[in-house]
Length: 122
Image 1 (tube, rainbow, N blue to C red):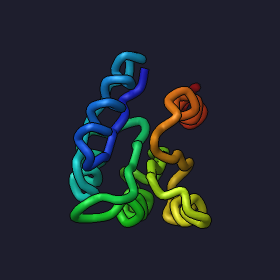
Image 2 (cartoon, rainbow, N blue to C red):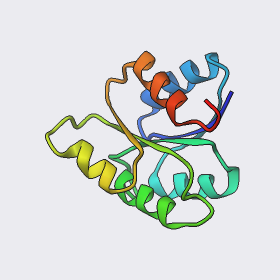
Image 3 (cartoon, rainbow, N blue to C red):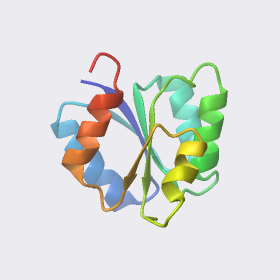
Image 4 (cartoon, one colour):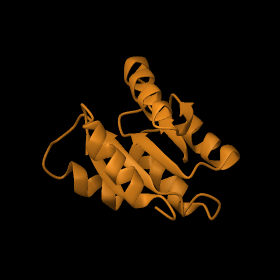
């Protein structure tokens, strides 16, 4: 399966999603803020990033912009995770460089389908 970087500041969300992804066979790396997410993306070379948008230090929109601007991380697919389902939030996330958008609470089967669609060789 894939190495997935989960960038999520809420411990309950991070734990629940991380456990479910591991049960599906994925190797999950965790970060608790946008800067840590950028750092881990550069050092751990994940195959995909799940990026919460409301993060401390650097928000998910800016963290995604920085990942997509860097030659080392630009090709890594990013799925935005957001509790904000406001009109325009999906477009704002895609404009920041996210490849996909998923609202919280996460519909896990739908998220897995998006992960499968974005992973190389899937």
